[in-house]
Length: 268
Image (cartoon, rainbow, N blue to C red; front, side):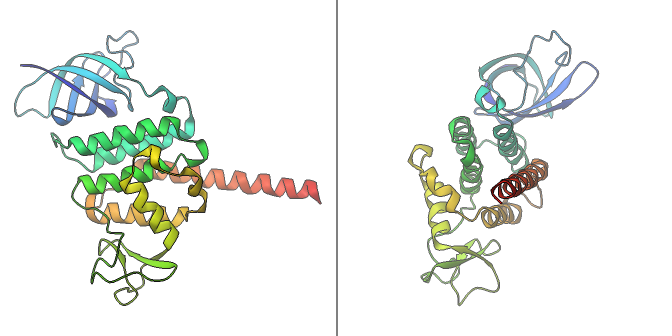
């Protein structure tokens, strides 16, 4: 039976000398794997439609009980060219696709999760380069909610008590913020950081004040979100692209320190 589906290409890998396997999260069938014969040839009819971070429409021959469906035709609807033109945007978009792939099973129909990924990718194309990490944070927050594990950030997740003071304890194991009485050495975040994350989870991209991004505790937020994902959603899975992202962040930090040092030398 010939079927058609719209979806986001998450990854592709070699199947043979001339063919590849393509993983697409579709609106109609959830996460599907396609065998694309001849896709690795220079003049393949599929062109760039099977490249990761591409939204397209895919015609395939479906057979029940098969892990791989045979791809017949593919057309690009949105190549996310703005993402692919900027290296930093591309790295963050790769993490979003990797998370979507790792946190779901084959034929897992989750339109809300797919919509969150697409919205965050569209935001990633246009957000200021210095705030390019925001769409990834937003996707992590919205993804866990779509999968049934919303992060609790309003009061103590354990006893329901208030969270006074400027520092708030965050416990991935318990599902979110905890009060001082229930805390047992959890990660501490500033109240302003918690408030920012709440807005990021609830609001649309155009409603987010990106100017507040620099005041947020970036390393602590990364640790909190990643630990929560690993503990609740991924079942121990860790997106490989996070490792690449971390190497990029370290390289950027070293470059920034070097430039600061050279500037201070010039002033002295």
